[in-house]
Image (cartoon, rainbow, N blue to C red; front, side, top):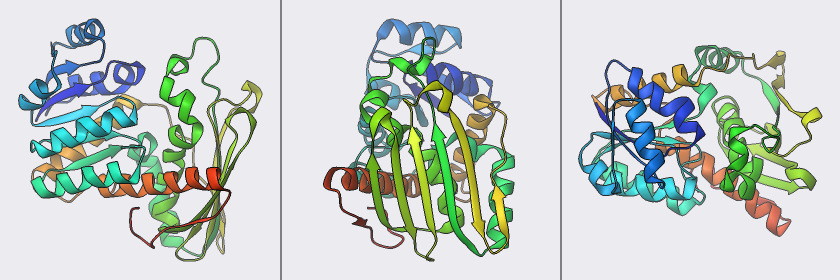
Length: 303
Protein backbone atom coordinates (compact mmCIF):
# COMPACT_ATOMS: atom_id res chain seq x y z
CA UNK A 1 0.00 0.00 0.00
CA UNK A 2 1.33 3.41 -0.99
CA UNK A 3 1.20 5.82 1.99
CA UNK A 4 1.51 9.54 2.37
CA UNK A 5 2.24 11.08 5.77
CA UNK A 6 0.80 14.40 6.87
CA UNK A 7 2.63 15.99 9.79
CA UNK A 8 6.23 16.56 10.90
CA UNK A 9 5.99 16.97 14.67
CA UNK A 10 7.33 14.77 17.47
CA UNK A 11 4.68 12.07 16.98
CA UNK A 12 5.41 11.82 13.26
CA UNK A 13 9.10 11.30 14.15
CA UNK A 14 8.48 8.87 17.01
CA UNK A 15 5.79 6.66 15.47
CA UNK A 16 4.37 7.34 12.02
CA UNK A 17 7.41 7.88 9.83
CA UNK A 18 9.68 5.12 11.18
CA UNK A 19 6.79 2.63 11.23
CA UNK A 20 5.79 3.39 7.64
CA UNK A 21 9.41 3.18 6.48
CA UNK A 22 9.93 -0.17 8.22
CA UNK A 23 6.68 -1.89 7.23
CA UNK A 24 7.24 -4.61 4.60
CA UNK A 25 3.89 -3.98 2.90
CA UNK A 26 4.18 -0.19 2.71
CA UNK A 27 5.70 2.08 0.10
CA UNK A 28 6.35 5.32 1.97
CA UNK A 29 5.75 7.81 -0.84
CA UNK A 30 5.85 11.28 0.64
CA UNK A 31 5.49 13.78 3.47
CA UNK A 32 3.51 17.00 3.70
CA UNK A 33 3.89 19.42 6.59
CA UNK A 34 2.91 22.95 7.47
CA UNK A 35 6.64 23.73 7.59
CA UNK A 36 8.15 22.75 4.19
CA UNK A 37 11.67 22.57 5.62
CA UNK A 38 10.62 20.07 8.27
CA UNK A 39 8.72 18.04 5.68
CA UNK A 40 11.82 17.90 3.51
CA UNK A 41 14.01 16.81 6.40
CA UNK A 42 11.62 14.07 7.57
CA UNK A 43 11.12 12.80 4.02
CA UNK A 44 14.85 12.65 3.38
CA UNK A 45 15.42 10.75 6.61
CA UNK A 46 13.10 7.97 5.50
CA UNK A 47 13.65 7.91 1.75
CA UNK A 48 10.36 9.62 0.88
CA UNK A 49 9.55 12.75 -1.14
CA UNK A 50 8.47 16.08 0.34
CA UNK A 51 5.22 17.48 -1.06
CA UNK A 52 4.23 21.14 -1.16
CA UNK A 53 0.51 20.54 -1.79
CA UNK A 54 -1.93 18.44 0.23
CA UNK A 55 -3.97 17.27 -2.72
CA UNK A 56 -0.90 16.34 -4.72
CA UNK A 57 0.19 13.88 -2.04
CA UNK A 58 -3.34 12.53 -1.66
CA UNK A 59 -3.46 11.91 -5.42
CA UNK A 60 -0.22 9.91 -5.43
CA UNK A 61 -1.07 7.38 -2.68
CA UNK A 62 -3.51 4.66 -1.69
CA UNK A 63 -3.71 5.70 1.96
CA UNK A 64 -2.80 8.55 4.26
CA UNK A 65 -1.46 8.64 7.80
CA UNK A 66 -1.93 11.82 9.80
CA UNK A 67 0.03 13.23 12.73
CA UNK A 68 -1.47 16.71 12.98
CA UNK A 69 -3.76 18.62 15.36
CA UNK A 70 -7.29 17.16 15.30
CA UNK A 71 -8.91 20.07 13.48
CA UNK A 72 -6.23 20.09 10.78
CA UNK A 73 -6.40 16.30 10.53
CA UNK A 74 -10.19 16.34 10.11
CA UNK A 75 -10.02 18.56 7.02
CA UNK A 76 -7.29 16.50 5.36
CA UNK A 77 -9.01 13.22 6.24
CA UNK A 78 -12.26 14.40 4.67
CA UNK A 79 -10.47 15.42 1.46
CA UNK A 80 -8.64 12.11 1.30
CA UNK A 81 -11.78 10.04 1.96
CA UNK A 82 -13.66 11.87 -0.77
CA UNK A 83 -10.75 11.07 -3.08
CA UNK A 84 -11.14 7.37 -2.29
CA UNK A 85 -8.06 7.00 -0.09
CA UNK A 86 -7.82 4.80 3.00
CA UNK A 87 -7.32 6.58 6.33
CA UNK A 88 -4.99 5.91 9.25
CA UNK A 89 -5.82 8.72 11.64
CA UNK A 90 -4.54 9.69 15.04
CA UNK A 91 -6.80 10.14 18.02
CA UNK A 92 -9.00 12.10 18.34
CA UNK A 93 -10.07 12.14 14.70
CA UNK A 94 -11.67 15.58 15.15
CA UNK A 95 -12.74 18.07 17.80
CA UNK A 96 -16.46 18.01 16.95
CA UNK A 97 -19.07 15.34 16.41
CA UNK A 98 -20.02 16.97 13.13
CA UNK A 99 -16.50 16.78 11.71
CA UNK A 100 -16.06 13.19 12.88
CA UNK A 101 -19.41 12.16 11.38
CA UNK A 102 -18.43 13.80 8.09
CA UNK A 103 -15.29 11.69 7.87
CA UNK A 104 -17.22 8.50 8.65
CA UNK A 105 -19.85 9.32 6.03
CA UNK A 106 -17.30 10.15 3.32
CA UNK A 107 -15.34 6.96 3.98
CA UNK A 108 -18.51 4.88 3.82
CA UNK A 109 -19.63 6.55 0.60
CA UNK A 110 -16.29 5.90 -1.08
CA UNK A 111 -15.95 2.44 0.51
CA UNK A 112 -12.52 3.15 1.96
CA UNK A 113 -11.08 1.59 5.10
CA UNK A 114 -10.21 3.54 8.22
CA UNK A 115 -8.25 2.89 11.41
CA UNK A 116 -7.69 5.21 14.39
CA UNK A 117 -4.38 4.96 16.22
CA UNK A 118 -5.04 4.55 19.95
CA UNK A 119 -1.48 3.55 20.80
CA UNK A 120 -1.86 1.07 23.67
CA UNK A 121 -4.91 -0.59 22.14
CA UNK A 122 -2.57 -1.95 19.46
CA UNK A 123 -0.40 -3.74 22.01
CA UNK A 124 -1.28 -7.46 22.30
CA UNK A 125 -1.14 -7.40 26.11
CA UNK A 126 -3.96 -4.84 26.21
CA UNK A 127 -6.10 -6.70 23.71
CA UNK A 128 -5.65 -9.93 25.69
CA UNK A 129 -6.66 -8.10 28.88
CA UNK A 130 -9.78 -6.67 27.22
CA UNK A 131 -10.77 -10.10 25.93
CA UNK A 132 -10.36 -11.62 29.39
CA UNK A 133 -12.32 -8.98 31.30
CA UNK A 134 -15.11 -8.98 28.73
CA UNK A 135 -15.40 -12.73 29.10
CA UNK A 136 -15.52 -12.42 32.90
CA UNK A 137 -18.34 -9.85 32.84
CA UNK A 138 -20.15 -8.40 35.84
CA UNK A 139 -18.23 -5.12 35.90
CA UNK A 140 -19.79 -2.30 37.89
CA UNK A 141 -17.25 0.46 37.42
CA UNK A 142 -13.94 1.49 35.95
CA UNK A 143 -11.47 4.10 37.13
CA UNK A 144 -8.73 5.59 35.00
CA UNK A 145 -6.18 8.16 36.12
CA UNK A 146 -4.05 9.50 33.28
CA UNK A 147 -2.04 12.47 34.49
CA UNK A 148 0.90 13.77 32.51
CA UNK A 149 3.16 16.77 32.89
CA UNK A 150 4.13 17.54 29.30
CA UNK A 151 5.08 21.17 29.85
CA UNK A 152 8.21 20.28 31.78
CA UNK A 153 11.53 21.25 30.12
CA UNK A 154 12.64 18.75 27.50
CA UNK A 155 9.24 17.20 26.80
CA UNK A 156 8.80 17.25 22.99
CA UNK A 157 5.03 17.58 23.25
CA UNK A 158 5.19 20.68 25.46
CA UNK A 159 5.31 22.98 22.44
CA UNK A 160 2.02 21.59 21.10
CA UNK A 161 -0.45 24.48 20.89
CA UNK A 162 -3.52 22.26 20.57
CA UNK A 163 -2.55 20.22 23.64
CA UNK A 164 -2.08 23.38 25.65
CA UNK A 165 -5.47 24.72 24.53
CA UNK A 166 -7.48 21.48 24.70
CA UNK A 167 -5.74 19.79 27.61
CA UNK A 168 -5.90 16.27 28.90
CA UNK A 169 -9.56 15.80 27.97
CA UNK A 170 -8.68 15.68 24.28
CA UNK A 171 -5.09 14.42 24.48
CA UNK A 172 -5.14 11.52 26.97
CA UNK A 173 -8.93 11.31 27.26
CA UNK A 174 -9.24 9.37 23.98
CA UNK A 175 -6.93 6.65 25.31
CA UNK A 176 -9.01 6.31 28.48
CA UNK A 177 -12.33 6.13 26.64
CA UNK A 178 -10.96 3.66 24.08
CA UNK A 179 -9.96 1.34 26.90
CA UNK A 180 -13.33 1.46 28.68
CA UNK A 181 -15.81 1.20 25.79
CA UNK A 182 -15.10 -2.39 24.69
CA UNK A 183 -15.62 -3.62 28.27
CA UNK A 184 -18.45 -1.49 29.66
CA UNK A 185 -20.21 -0.66 26.40
CA UNK A 186 -21.63 2.56 24.90
CA UNK A 187 -22.02 5.71 26.97
CA UNK A 188 -25.42 7.29 27.60
CA UNK A 189 -24.63 10.11 30.05
CA UNK A 190 -21.60 12.33 30.59
CA UNK A 191 -20.80 14.70 33.45
CA UNK A 192 -17.50 16.55 33.76
CA UNK A 193 -15.70 19.23 35.77
CA UNK A 194 -12.35 20.92 35.17
CA UNK A 195 -10.13 22.42 37.84
CA UNK A 196 -6.72 24.03 38.15
CA UNK A 197 -3.71 22.65 36.28
CA UNK A 198 -6.00 21.02 33.70
CA UNK A 199 -7.31 18.55 36.28
CA UNK A 200 -10.36 17.22 34.45
CA UNK A 201 -12.79 14.77 36.01
CA UNK A 202 -15.26 12.87 33.82
CA UNK A 203 -18.09 10.59 34.93
CA UNK A 204 -19.63 8.24 32.34
CA UNK A 205 -22.78 6.11 32.58
CA UNK A 206 -22.78 3.09 30.27
CA UNK A 207 -25.76 1.30 28.73
CA UNK A 208 -25.42 -1.68 31.05
CA UNK A 209 -25.54 0.55 34.14
CA UNK A 210 -21.81 0.64 34.92
CA UNK A 211 -20.14 3.93 35.82
CA UNK A 212 -16.62 4.91 34.83
CA UNK A 213 -14.54 7.69 36.32
CA UNK A 214 -11.71 9.43 34.45
CA UNK A 215 -9.14 11.80 35.93
CA UNK A 216 -7.19 13.47 33.13
CA UNK A 217 -4.48 16.09 32.79
CA UNK A 218 -1.43 16.95 30.71
CA UNK A 219 -0.37 19.76 33.06
CA UNK A 220 -0.30 18.01 36.42
CA UNK A 221 2.53 18.68 38.84
CA UNK A 222 5.40 16.34 38.05
CA UNK A 223 4.99 14.57 41.39
CA UNK A 224 1.45 13.55 40.41
CA UNK A 225 2.21 11.93 37.06
CA UNK A 226 0.60 8.50 36.84
CA UNK A 227 -1.26 6.06 34.62
CA UNK A 228 -3.55 3.77 36.61
CA UNK A 229 -6.57 1.90 35.27
CA UNK A 230 -8.78 -0.83 36.71
CA UNK A 231 -12.21 -2.43 36.43
CA UNK A 232 -14.25 -3.37 39.52
CA UNK A 233 -17.13 -5.82 39.76
CA UNK A 234 -18.38 -9.26 40.66
CA UNK A 235 -15.03 -10.81 39.70
CA UNK A 236 -13.13 -8.42 41.98
CA UNK A 237 -10.55 -5.98 40.69
CA UNK A 238 -8.88 -6.22 37.29
CA UNK A 239 -5.90 -3.90 36.96
CA UNK A 240 -4.96 -2.95 33.42
CA UNK A 241 -1.43 -4.27 32.92
CA UNK A 242 1.47 -1.95 32.12
CA UNK A 243 2.86 -2.31 28.61
CA UNK A 244 6.19 -1.29 27.11
CA UNK A 245 6.26 1.98 25.24
CA UNK A 246 6.72 0.79 21.64
CA UNK A 247 4.91 3.28 19.38
CA UNK A 248 6.56 2.08 16.17
CA UNK A 249 5.49 -1.50 16.84
CA UNK A 250 1.96 -0.39 17.74
CA UNK A 251 1.68 1.77 14.63
CA UNK A 252 2.83 -1.15 12.51
CA UNK A 253 -0.12 -3.16 13.83
CA UNK A 254 -2.45 -0.29 12.95
CA UNK A 255 -1.08 -0.42 9.41
CA UNK A 256 -1.73 -4.17 9.37
CA UNK A 257 -5.35 -3.53 10.36
CA UNK A 258 -5.81 -0.93 7.64
CA UNK A 259 -4.28 -3.06 4.89
CA UNK A 260 -6.36 -6.05 5.98
CA UNK A 261 -9.60 -4.07 5.95
CA UNK A 262 -8.76 -2.43 2.63
CA UNK A 263 -8.18 -5.87 1.09
CA UNK A 264 -11.58 -7.19 2.09
CA UNK A 265 -10.83 -8.37 5.61
CA UNK A 266 -12.82 -7.42 8.71
CA UNK A 267 -12.96 -3.81 9.80
CA UNK A 268 -10.67 -2.90 12.65
CA UNK A 269 -12.21 -2.74 16.12
CA UNK A 270 -10.67 0.74 16.17
CA UNK A 271 -12.26 1.94 12.95
CA UNK A 272 -13.58 5.38 12.07
CA UNK A 273 -16.98 4.75 13.65
CA UNK A 274 -15.28 3.87 16.93
CA UNK A 275 -13.17 7.01 16.62
CA UNK A 276 -16.33 9.09 16.09
CA UNK A 277 -17.93 7.49 19.17
CA UNK A 278 -14.94 8.57 21.25
CA UNK A 279 -15.20 12.12 19.87
CA UNK A 280 -18.90 12.27 20.77
CA UNK A 281 -18.12 11.34 24.38
CA UNK A 282 -15.30 13.87 24.70
CA UNK A 283 -17.40 16.61 23.10
CA UNK A 284 -20.19 15.84 25.58
CA UNK A 285 -17.68 16.14 28.43
CA UNK A 286 -16.58 19.51 27.10
CA UNK A 287 -20.21 20.62 26.91
CA UNK A 288 -20.79 19.47 30.48
CA UNK A 289 -17.77 21.44 31.69
CA UNK A 290 -19.08 24.55 29.96
CA UNK A 291 -22.74 24.29 30.98
CA UNK A 292 -22.50 22.53 34.32
CA UNK A 293 -25.11 19.99 33.19
CA UNK A 294 -25.11 16.27 32.49
CA UNK A 295 -25.20 15.53 28.76
CA UNK A 296 -27.23 12.62 27.42
CA UNK A 297 -26.06 10.71 24.33
CA UNK A 298 -28.14 8.43 22.11
CA UNK A 299 -27.32 4.91 23.30
CA UNK A 300 -24.72 3.30 21.10
CA UNK A 301 -24.73 6.06 18.49
CA UNK A 302 -21.81 8.42 17.81
CA UNK A 303 -22.91 11.98 18.45
